[in-house]
Length: 461
Image (cartoon, rainbow, N blue to C red; front, side, top):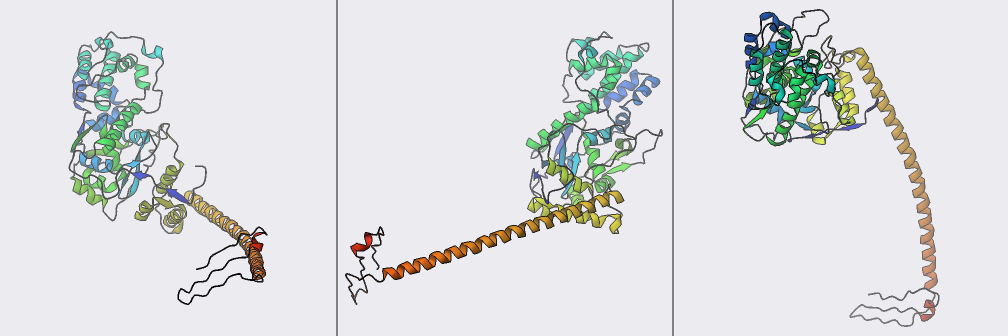
């Protein structure tokens, strides 16, 4: 995209036109299970379980222990407002006509899960068998893991830690169905604590959820029941976090306490209760005049993975639209009808909303430096338009001179044609018949005229 915007930014296509989304009552199944948290607690000692809570799974465990309800209605309404893009590894939606982006960054912010790291592990990192487990014979179920964990003794602290971690990771984050057999590769990773703890399980969980959402958007939105794999509660809470009116109406939150200076606190930790509204109640929020939507969530302080992303297809126009929305532009109904945003008008609106123009709020990007950048961009666009106008004026002048020249040449040809016709009138007419009944006359050129190479014999009626 560089450092400039085109004058007209095209808007992406919508999965359903605004106002025609499928809003029928729906039920969404999730396969993520928090039941194994109690199982692990019963097998491990308090000290062993605390060790697990101190890992990257801590925020998710804390959230899961609150038994929050997944709202299929809220999720369905947003999925029905999906936006079609070329992006493969992120999702874009609209609510009240305003954009929301869900990517691996937002998933990480909601869960605190590790998302940066190599998915493909070196072969020697997963081939060493530290523990003798029946699970190494092939695919395994959650019950197989539970059984293996229950066979361990307190003397095998590292082994119990590895099995318990894997059981919680698979049951909460990676569930596909009630009868799903997890791959042998997961067990091999759990054989080495260093591999287990460095592997980006969050990336794997996000990818599973992403694919599940895409399948639902493509084929299931007009059904009354469908399922989502992975950890859909993170998606639900992200919706609440991005739409404050939904958050205040259908959840209970508490301030996030900073437990240790310089340590990030993730967004899932603030939610203590969720409520499941009806489709109608969600639509009422969408139509509220004071609706605000956050397209891209602001950064969490001290988060080392704040810039996590996945490689994706380039879409400079879409990135430019998102940038305008991030800086405070509110997409209008006319923009959607025209399928484009006038970037000059958008930048002017952002400038008006800025603190330098009497308003301290331009989303989460409010700052004098940002406004100065916007004003500079506006001036650059204005100068570009002026240059284009001068260029057009110059080209019009050239065209006007061309038209004058053409007019002169046409005038010369007309004069020559008139002169030739006058010469033709000096020749005598052989036959002239006047018939007052038929009002018909016949004119025949003399043969001598055809000898000049001019075939001008004609009949006039």
